[in-house]
Amino acid sequence: MTLREYLAQQQRLVDSELDRLVPPETTPPETIHRAMRYSLFAGGKRIRPILCIEAARAVSPSADGVVAAACSLELIHTYSLIHDDLPALDNDDYRRGKLTNHKVFGEAMAILAGDALLTLAFQVLAGLNTTDDRKARMIAELSAASGSVGGMIGGQVADLEGEGKPPEPRLLETIHRAKTGALLRASLRLGAICAGAAGDQYAALSRFGEHVGLAFQIVDDILDVEESSEALGKTAGKDAQQGKITFPAVYGLETSRRMAAEECARAHQVLEPFGERVARLHEIADHIVRRKS
Amino acid sequence: MTLREYLAQQQRLVDSELDRLVPPETTPPETIHRAMRYSLFAGGKRIRPILCIEAARAVSPSADGVVAAACSLELIHTYSLIHDDLPALDNDDYRRGKLTNHKVFGEAMAILAGDALLTLAFQVLAGLNTTDDRKARMIAELSAASGSVGGMIGGQVADLEGEGKPPEPRLLETIHRAKTGALLRASLRLGAICAGAAGDQYAALSRFGEHVGLAFQIVDDILDVEESSEALGKTAGKDAQQGKITFPAVYGLETSRRMAAEECARAHQVLEPFGERVARLHEIADHIVRRKS
Image 1 (cartoon, chains in turn red, cyan):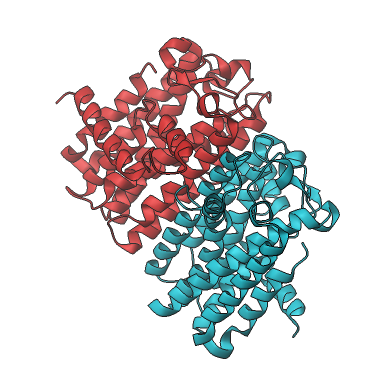
Image 2 (image 1 turned 45 degrees about the vertical axis):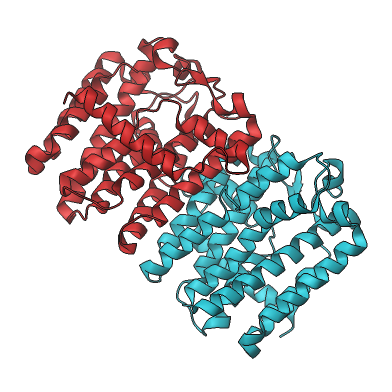
């Protein structure tokens, strides 16, 4: 199976589990479930859930509850996009080529739909078909990775407050480690926990997540400069317009490209102890650096 | 100790635990931690945490981690107030006699501070000093009680969508069971789980939570009609102005008062099997019906 076919297959697996986990549009109050599903099924690449599932496979051929655990990452990611797009934050009208949630359902519903997806992420983990010990560890990891101290929300705040500040390497690193890095690392960690990883396996998969996370963000920043809004499915060139601190702004495009390739090389390296079982993780790392949207 | 003294003492206990659990204002990014603390320490009555602690005492003289578990309820309650007050939702400028969060920190920070408090609630439960089994049960209960299906968020949506609709008893009940009832019942349930309650104890404390929750909401609706903004610390008379479905709107003031008293009587009744250990729960039930703000 090619990587493309494999990713499409995994996306279908994740989508069908998400469909099972999220209340149907017919469950009252209908509006919020429509709003939740609108953004959740707007064509996301499911990169976090797929990393989670692959991390589990690196450790063990079967891991109870891992697909549902993987979905909790997509629930968090989707809520953060909905809130991020709000007029008070990034004020975006388009996301993945579709109108943003508040453009369709109004601001009040978009805020509540985000809250509900965030809440559901933890409900899903608490209801997982696995041991209570693993549930508690996954919930601790996911909440920390999406929280205000070194997690996603902390990164969003630092990002907002960084607008217009001089593009300084340390600030850039702090923002991105928190804003996207923590949740990507958590994706690998949740898979590792779900599969009962030993300490050294957990550490290696965590480091893989850190390198891939950084590569992912660098490429995101580059794409915002180089690609059209049409190709990205969202407004391109917004980073520069908003005075955001980005890798191209700090290092220039060429150095940024080299840095992404270096992070990718390090990601490959930390996977060495796993051997053949992680062929797909290697491919995904390359894919993240080469993607065009 | 009088009830007043006892409540003040319990509030101090909860406040000091919240202070320990929430990142200090000096932790970066500072702004969000200031915003989180601003609303968290704005003079809340801590009724949910106190109910949680008392439910645990009804079951056992000591329950590991119950004060922190109780704080998770206040984190959820506070996040919901911050988001509820936003211009896109209730658009309130004052809460507990102080400017609302977005009035002080701006809308973007208020949205993110709410998200962070919500996330922290689950982080606190996952890190509790108790068994993993109890952690998982508490997280399942808290997430369901604050979620979109029969939980707090679902109630908020039904409430928003009910504005201007004919005041119909069934709709009123659906809204309030979800909007305030579910989290109040969860307050009792978290305490019960933390203390290792048996099935019948858990069921009785749940029912107590349901009756007290309904009484609480009826009184809230009455106060919105009868009291001044000054006494309430928030804008009075907003329910009628916004065409909300309330108990006075459906049943009139006199019947509403009688219903609150009846719910309170039922609350007392379900506590009978616990005997002397629940003297404070009886007093709190009376206090909820008699309060003036």
